[in-house]
Amino acid sequence: MARYKHYDYNQTKMIPLRFADQIQPGTFEYTLSHVVDHDLDLSLFESRHRNDYNGAPAYDPALLLKIVPFAYSRGITSSRKIAQACRENVIFMALSADSQPHHSTLADFISRMDDVIAPLFTQVLTYRDSEIDGKAVVRFQGYRKTCRVCPLKSQCLRKPNQKEGRQVSFYPKANTPKTSFMDRMKEKIDSPVGRHIYSQRLGTVEPVFGNLETNKGLKRFTLRGESKVNAQWLMYCLVHNIEKISTAGQLRH
Image (cartoon, rainbow, N blue to C red):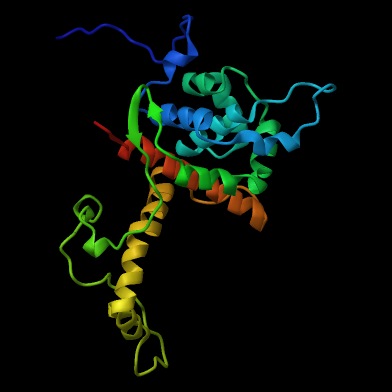
C-alpha cells in the first residue's frame, strides 16, 4: 500500500513576510491596490478629520478602501469578520499593512461612504490609461453597447446567434384579460425599441447582477437607509469594475 508524507492544514508556522510580495501582479488585489494608490482622488476624505495638531492619527482611507472592497469581492460583508480577516488572513494583512483596524472603524467607514462613493465610482469608470507593473493597459470604460450587433457578443452571450428576445414567464390567474400579460410583454420586448433597450440591459445590468449575486455573495444589504444602501451597492459595483480591469485589461504593444 502506498505511503504519503503527512500534512496538516491546522499547523502554525512562523515565517518572515514582506507584505508587498503577497500582492501578486495579475490578481484582483493587485489591481485594487494599484487603482487606489494611483488613480483615485482620496482628498474627498480630508474633510472628515480635524487632527492636524490634536487627536490621535486616523487610519489612512487608502487602506480602508482596499480592505473593504477586497472583503466584498470575497463575499464578506460583516465588519467583525473583515476585522478578523485583517488579523488572520495574509492577503488582508498585506493590503492593510497589518494595521488591524477595529470592526467599529470599518463599520463607521462603510456607513459614511454615501458622500464620497459616487465620485470614486465615477473615477473608476472614467480614468485614463496608465501603467501597471511597467506595462500600459487599456482601461475598461463603462460605456454601453447593443449586444446583438456587437462584434464581441460571442464572448459574452451564451447563444450569440439567437434572433429571438428573451422569453417571459407569467402564471395566469382567474379573470385574466383577453390580451395576456405575457403577450403584452412579448410584444413590448420584440418591438424594435424593446429589442434595443433589452439588449442594453443584457450587456450592462444583468451581468453585474449575476456576478455580484452569484460570485460575490451579495444576497442582501447589511446597512439600512436609502443613502447607506446606495453606498454599499456602489461599493459592490466598484468591485465589479475593478475586477473587469484586472481580468479584461488588454496590453498595449
